[in-house]
Image 1 (cartoon, one colour):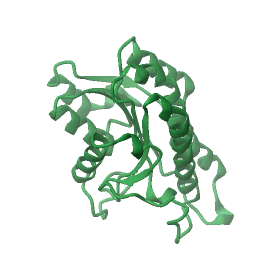
Image 2 (cartoon, helix red, strand yellow):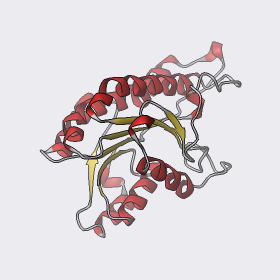
Image 3 (cartoon, one colour):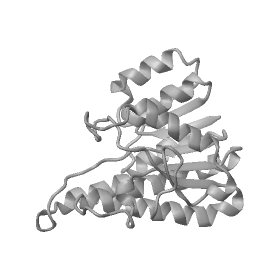
Image 4 (spheres, one colour):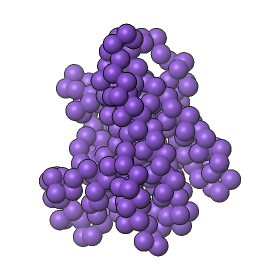
Length: 230
């Protein structure tokens, strides 16, 4: 299987690369600065050509187009994991940083939307036709009982809707498109107090991705496979 993974230099993205490489898959890894992605470079040295690193700024249309051109090259792509994301600045309703919110939206929502569209030709050549958006339970409207985190919550709720739209549009072609909550994980974003290690979260998400069926498209799952309310 051939995967494209964004935000692959650290956290969940890096762990996706590790686990998928270990079982023999091929990966196109998108990172802001390949030259500084030392752990990915080390993994690539032992991967026998199955891991390629590409510069990718998911908020930059030209960067997205360049990544899609490099990844495509007439080859099939089986699975896209839209993992790159940011939390952004938080604040009370009367203290919001709207410029930061706009950047959060550009990365968390428009970036995955733009990249999925750019990679459609390669995904159509693939056999699996799976698109996975790493979102958050904080983007669930039905589950929101705490408020706050305006930029992050809004951007992830919008990503969930974008996923649902993609499902409606692409399901007739055999695509399975889902949103996935990785849990509260010990990453730079989640912090050391989070209960989940990246290895556990990613192991669960890969298991969910491997088992996806046509009827799962358009749904919102946790890393453990439970469905999450919108």
